[in-house]
Length: 477
Ligand SMILES: C[S@@+](CC[C@H](N)C(=O)[O-])C[C@H]1O[C@@H](n2cnc3c(N)ncnc32)[C@H](O)[C@@H]1O
Image (cartoon, rainbow, N blue to C red; front, side, top):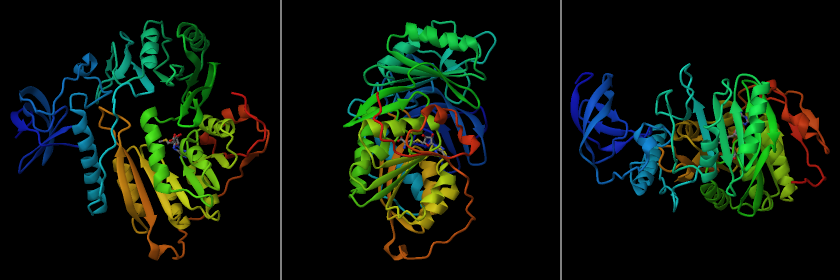
């Protein structure tokens, strides 16, 4: 087989990049948009020693698992979804299989992976729409990126986005968008209220004026911000949008992380709660806590929760979220987890919640967890690969007692997994092994009536810690 050959490929499985897999005795070919059961005419593109990639030239016999994607943008190569053409039950089946395979290979054992928890109505779930602009002199299209390409696909209607994101997009694309804006991120709550932030190299008057124009043109737009390479500027309106999940009210910072699928986010909280079985004696450490999504849900059932997060807008929201929900036993620190976790060594933490970004947790954090030896760790991951790597680092002390994918991103190959780890009984009394010297930085301590404005401009890069203590003042929302 050589590049440009046309082959007949019968797709057998799906890989972690969402591609169809065709395997012979000698070679494996990955075929984007191939579906298990398809017979395809494939043009071989890149070829290495024993694997390569191919492009579908024709569908000779479609798999019975294929469905009509009913999306023009998907037909045009939009990278927003990869599996819109695969039956939803099959997507869920493969998500669990892929997790099983990745963990099995990394840990060298067969991990029991429970079925992936899907959505009843797997459409219009995405609360965040991330739009890119084409970087070309002749065109400044605004839309989603093509898979593995910098090309932009504009779309008329997206079946995944909340309707209010779609409406905002329709209005924004008709405007004269300042040239320097390269990305526009739109987030809505379930009531249809929206927040927007731009990416641009610098803050300019033109961008500020544009934000005011949008505020007038988009009916339920609540606020606009701007992220530059190093800073975040709040431009106009509110800094947050509000969302209720279960019994809790959350203020979601326009520029901070929040779970992208509100329906499944609630499921995620409940799974974590059931796994923890929290008691009033428990002290919980929520690493990478965002706006307090897990911490606040657990707070009322435990002695105390501590959240660490390096995005100051998110921490600002977490503190306010505690107040508006009358939670007094949640403490939040704005810091890099790697630096701050050492200060929890002597706090007798019972359980750690670990929900890092896609790259996973840093080895220093995992080392520290091993020294702290909490009885339970709940790891929530949006990347099975980094999850597998991190689990390996913990596997000498912890055993996996639960592993379940939760479908936060239907019709994409992205997989969210919840894993419970329990400390091996025989290891709970072993001495901690300190591998690295602790470096403690002087924190800025803002007590009681802290000034939220001060918090806003402190960047994680400055390596300063802001310890926000509980304030007795009631927050107005
Ligand atoms: C996957 S999100 C989880 C947020 C939160 N647990 C939730 O459910 O909303 C990861 C979070 O980690 C934060 N983060 C990334 N790197 C960090 C670091 N080195 N130290 C502290 N927080 C970090 C991000 O800002 C983001 O809010």
